[in-house]
Image (cartoon, rainbow, N blue to C red):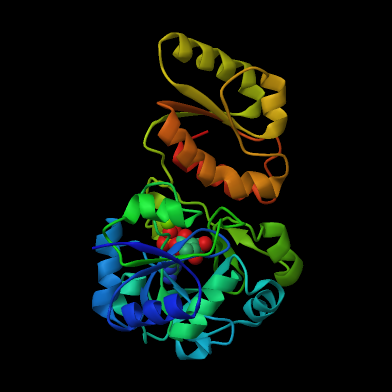
Length: 332
Ligand code: TXA
Ligand code: MG
């Protein structure tokens, strides 16, 4: 199959609708990462998404809808705190999990009685979702366990030949996946941290829990238990306080003939000085936006990435650290 990358316009939207309504998959931009979408009502189309990605079939998908879509046809109950959160932060990088009405394909939630709904803010995503006017089940548009894509080129690298169309909406400005929030209980619980932070949620909802997967327990958000976001090269991760140890590792591996790069923020890069650096940038938003971009750049130009955690790890850095640890298979 020939894979085309097209800008979001009338003719590519028409093509995307043709593909979606005939049971195919379309990659589309969002403000977090690119998604690989299929009609959430079409069982075979949803199952095909799992096949294309090589995704384990117990890891449920998020359903994406445009901002005027009536989600009461998909979910049975939306608590007051969730309505307030939606008013404050949607459209945006926040996915909310509700009790499902069971109207979408069973393959979307992999047997769970809940459904994750996301209303992305990216203009291209809104145009696509509005044009097809269907709930779109979409995981990130990467091969399972690889780094999530933040550009049309990243999607092409992973899925060339496997899908017909990639809608190109430029680089994703957010850079890490949406916050996943369980809204089925009396108060919200974060299942995956992201750009909508715990502090932001608490400000609106009063309280907010954070779910931590315990050894041997069935995951409430099955995606948590899998290795994720990994570049195709060796990785190491050091805390900022272990910076000197990281530099020693860098020098040792370089002397052994490895092609080594250090992944760190701009402040750390200045302290290190002369070295081969994948610079994540200065501000927290830049660091999040560049994380996957730099991991992909690293895997294509190095045999070892030595990542150094940012010094400050609150706010959106909670999500960045979560992804860094998973990318480096680390228990830091
Ligand atoms: O930003 C994002 O969320 C991106 C873009 C494309 O929207 N999507 C994304 O999808 O990251 P994916 O499939 O890579 O991650 C979905 C996460 C998984 O951790 C999954 O376990 C969780 O959402 N999830 C989906 N449905 C769920 C449900 N009903 N209950 C609990 N967790 C759920
Ligand atoms: Mg993913």
